[in-house]
Amino acid sequence: MRIAWRLAGPRSAGLAALCALLAAVPGAARAAAPSTIVPPPGGSNCAPVPISVSGPGTVEYDHGVIGLPPGQACPAYIPGATVTLVAIADAGATFVGWSGACQGTGLCDVTVGSGTPVTATFAWLATLSVSRTGSGGGLVRSSPAGIECGATCSAAVAEGTTLSLTAQADARSRFAGWVGGPCDGSLLPCQIAVTGLTTVTARFDQDPPTGAPPVTTSAPPPTCATDRSPCPPGTLRLAAATAPVAHGHATIVLSCDGPGGCDEHLVLTVALERRAHGALVRERVLAGRAHVVLADGERQAVHIRIARGVRALLAQRSRLRGTLAGPGRAWAVRIASA
Image: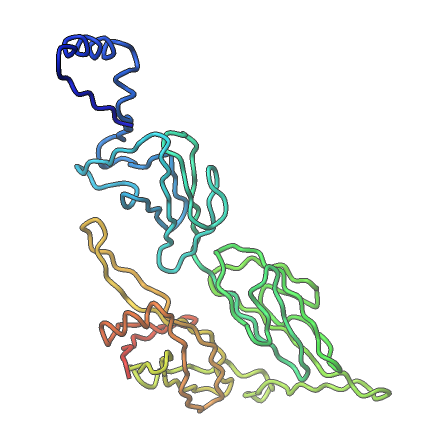
């Protein structure tokens, strides 16, 4: 509240004396306007409360990114005011959550001058990919939710997240166990820590008819040598260096050479450049993923769903530099609007 004094007439001298007396009273001047807190000069943490960031991400608030360039003055804050903090993960990362003054993963409202610290935790993304094999049918589910394979067989989670996988066979089928990967045998549930690209395969076999002896329903793997040893995996090849994008999907033509066939999980990324605090930053952004299974000599057009953010960039630039990577190999591809 602001009080304006108007001095006029024969009482002005008395009022002036009253003003001088009020100015001499401790605290009277301070009541005229709220004071402010000014953090140290630029180059230090210009946050309104003690804030720390753990992992690949930044925290933004009303006056921009925390931690200004050297020489740039920090803003002033009014004690008791509310400032909203926003957590922004780097490309290929996710925001795990707040701790301290805020909890959860939403916006964080802090009070200037409270002194209560807050921490924003980020983590790189990792992918769990589940596949099914065998003559039977069934579902694989995860807890926390994310995988229901069936329909959803891949999920991106924070690096190091522990998931519990369960397998449920369909009618007249049975769960025959896990095949390779971090899950072993037929243990249910299977607890795994997801890092990088983690793959899990569940086998479901058909139950034999009632009264019939058990039979082996799976075909033996291809054999190549006279000793009937399994064939080595085939070699996956990129048949075209341009990946046209139409209806949100990039089309990449691949082929396989080798009697063992090809079974690989591929990741498509794009290279981007941006400026941050005057510096040029180069980064790779996830565009999409694909699971490719080809027989020897087979050639196939693989359709990869492109992430929404990458589609928006493609609409602006019409062409992006990409990399298609699999186990032990990578190809440069041009992602272009069809």
